[in-house]
Image 1: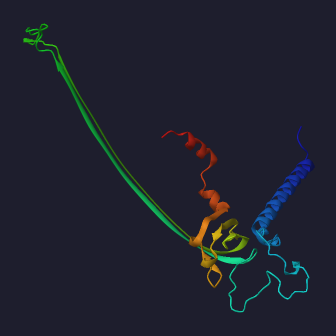
Image 2: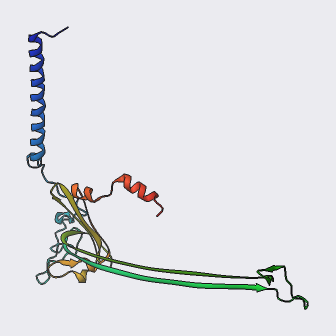
Length: 245
């Protein structure tokens, strides 16, 4: 049964409308993908604060002029010394390591045995090529192995971030913790640092080098398309873990 001309025209109009609708959806999706990073900006929220300083109004109203924890000296600097104070950490990590190995093994063995006289009689068992055959044996073996290996590693990490004093130890050392999050080209980069700082190592500018932090943990990581591209696929990692060589 053939379709009527009016039916063919309606079918063609339906195909054109569907195609137009699909193109419109694709166009809107592309626009949202291109401009979504700027149109859908959400208010920035600070990272979690490791520790908050004690409120100055938390002291008892006992009428005393002197209140512990609120003293300000005219001759001292503004270095961090209380919980909640901020301190600038200058991360300058430079590490390098190298290792060379050389192994050489050389062994040789020799074994010989012969029966040339038995109670004054020279034993012989037939002849080979006109010569008497006497029972004797000999064996030699040798083994040689040589191996060399070398490895070199170098790392450099430089950054600056603010850390918070989360605890003051009994000897005056400061336990600090800080983090920073930066978004670049659709990927997030995270910098975190934690450790113990000696109060005497804090400079008058309220800074301290990461090399002066005890029990330090310095972390630099990230996510996004760049880090995903540099990461080995999970199936390749699975087969690589099973490969014995």
